[in-house]
Image (cartoon, rainbow, N blue to C red; front, side, top):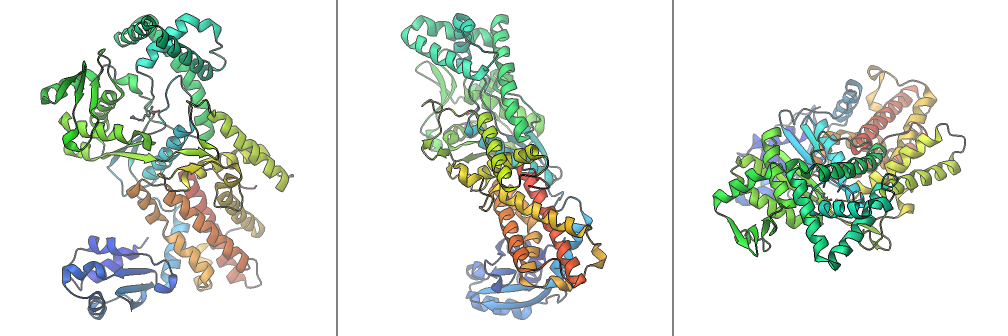
Length: 569
Ligand code: ARG
């Protein structure tokens, strides 16, 4: 598709001596369509050119040679140059792209670039909590979008399957394993054992000693310890998989923390050579005060065990070598901001290529709050994720039953709607915001929700079904789409590709979620104001074609977020 921003930047560039890319980055899309399709704020250049914005605007406009096939007119308003694109030009671009490409908006701009995405990453033998759900959903959306833009993506589930807590679990299992129904409800039962053994450790130093001993044995490859640990892992993964199946999650690698057990020695060796490791209360640490981080990074605990941070350092080394990444993204809640600050700082000492250090990005997100407060495991306020997802499906089913009792495949639709609602809710607001979990809001078919987008899609489907066939693009009279409601849709559709790029620039899938709401709303207005089935056959065909386009973009966009569309609901 023609890139109007670039065309405008090129046109301006010929009048002043500033790089197109820079100019392009200044161009805005005005909130009010009265101010044109694109606006160039001249005050951005005022300092550099030592002139008043208004004067700059006048001079550019005077010298500029615009292509009238593309740009209808240019106006100056308060230091802005407002550009109006020829309506027919945008319509043509969008409709032809819809006709031409099954995968509207797909590009290859990421070709040759590798992006590692570390997401979901729950802990073995512990509940898969709602924070992991957010990581899974946001990470999954980023994974899909990067891939759609041509990047080579590697999705990693960095399982928390290592650390001293396994020494404890092994001990608890040895002592009381038979009392618990681990096979039946593994995570629930293992959590109980974990709480009990922790209590025992507090009461008796000797028990704690044995737990530490177990973990050391595990690290050294003791057969019995490994066997139990593997059992925990297999059972936990079976549970997690139920959630992944419901969400449709996919990972290319399941290398968790344990995978790095034999790769940490090298990290420690490299760090030792830098001379930055110091002893402190028996532990080995790296001070980061000079880097503005008050808490040191612990490389080895006083009992000689490695840490979460050391394993992340080993993972960085491994991922740089294995995937030659350009970007390596980590998705966790903001509770781990300090951890990643420390790890990324220490990573500078590993002697890696600058590119690999630069590419590290912790993408944090807010908490999920119940209307009654934070969802937490410690307060016993545990919500099993699988139950949460199933409840959403069930509630969606009830709504469907009420609205459309004769619908076929009700169960399948309820699943798409229930899961879609949860996913959308996780993505609807900018990720750093805490999110309030409220059933009525999440499943409101008329709100800014997943079901609303699905509902709008279904509406486009039923319009198409009514007329039977989508007309051929060559037969469409594009003059029929110049009314403001159609124009609104066309412009949003045109912005799809750019929207996807914005998502990757800011690692912010909510930009796409908001976009889909805007498109769905624009279609709802169009649908209510414009009669689609009319006497005027040309008008009808044009509107049908637009409807077809909207359905396509909604489906692709929602799919990238991980939301499936029902055909009816
Ligand atoms: N397992 C960790 C947790 O549940 C998240 C891991 C994130 N990824 C990483 N490479 N540290 O908090």
